[in-house]
Length: 560
Image (cartoon, rainbow, N blue to C red; front, top):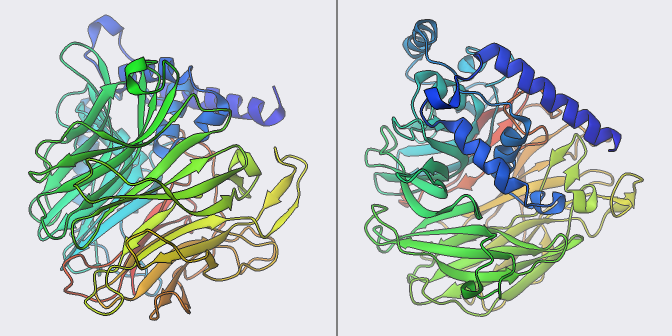
């Protein structure tokens, strides 16, 4: 075992001891109902089938689930009179909204709750998604506080946080957690995706639960709000598969603007059933799949296959699908095909509601940033090159244009003795455009060239009602040592021919890890989303993103 692995094992062992001491030892298995611990114990059995490189291909939320399982760090918080009183006081102390601070940056989650239940865990929010419809903006995020709070209530566990603004992003009110229901055998495990149409908002996240036969199910749950994000339904499983043989991961959700009852949910299925009927002749199968709802998320079709990979070699996978609905109802899906060294940005389209898809179009190739195949950036951030896909819904000449953005590190590499590929790769944000519904794509171009020895990562894209393009991302351009981190948004009024860069963070921060016992030590989240007003009422954009300027991870937002 190398030093890094040893130190990680020590940290996980410490987490287990600390958290068990802090929250109390679980009762005997025969004396308590099913809870998150049972789900995580079953997930541990599944995770043992996955090699180290394949685990590196999972989303931040799925990786965190395996971390919680393997470290035995999670025990159910036994509801008690003192814990109930603490929770009641937290609710009583909440204000109706947060006010602006640090210029245009607005707090999204209520950071006053972060250390209310423990000094050792429950203070991390990352991996934010948002949707904007008129005056309402909903932001979802991975939230370790949500787990502690929901566990203390003795209800279904939740790693999914949510906050809502009713004044178009000027202020937010955060809820303690997105509810999985009263059944302690259900667990919303994070990886949020938000979509909206009119006053209806949809929140998709990874969902683990125990069904009536005792089987643990790996799923994606979709909670719905019909009042602008004020209250939410219980999660409806959009896809459900046995957790003994499947890992459902990296979902994305889109609403058809021409028919808001139609919802499309794409995801990755890591399939270990070895069924020959699934087209892989009894081998491991990794697939991008799509489920459809035609009744506003109340029920969902069986998933169809967008693309699949049989018997993947070392480091190979399909992952990170993004689904967008075209102006004429077409279904567009972008995703990546990974190897140990690089990846292909791929695109497929459907003209029949997702029943069948075109052959894959290769948009570009990309080299992993950071320590090559280890997918680690300086500061021990786990990163990715996941693509973000957006469409122009304006009524000008650019209507229907598609944009893809991702990170590529092919242009800036230096020797590094610890890297699997013997090089450290500095990522740059790239983009490509299609004006023919994704049949062809422009040559990949850099949004803003990175300074020597600095890196950019986790880009996201959106287009507003006027056809203005925005690409937001993290950037270390201001720190010669490549430590300090800022968040920027690049805005183009000429379909990507030129960009103006806006700095969102009032000051840079250096990411810290190994601090929250409930989080994967290298988790930074897989994305921070920028969106435009889906109703077309407002021009401009809203970006939510993680900041650690106060020493722990919180979500903030900025409208521009």
